[in-house]
Image (cartoon, rainbow, N blue to C red; front, side, top):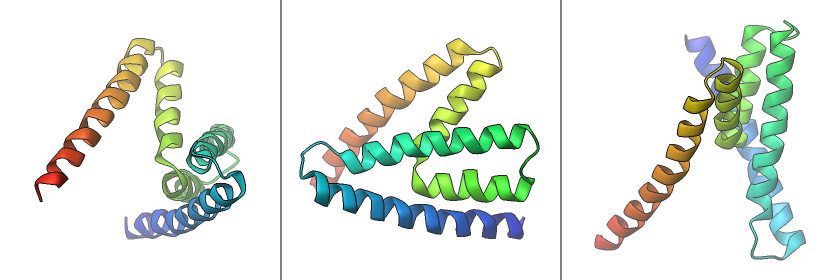
Length: 124
């Protein structure tokens, strides 16, 4: 368990660091109000986790390497990739309704939670 914790932490360190660099570089180079950095990181993270998941299904990666790269690196790089990977797994498992509900609930409740958090912060 502790080894898994270290693998996730190590991967997350590099994923988060790379997210910071990509976001900053794109923010400076694009000079736009559109969040190109976040958008790029989210799409790239989805590609990476899809690629890694496919390699894992073919037993090309050890469980430790998969944990390091998916939960660790991709989790630190973007949680959106994990969200999309979970949806893909639900679709593959024949649960399209669950995937749709998960997507809609995540978007709606996530936005509502953001607004509530912002409003609550104004109290302080």
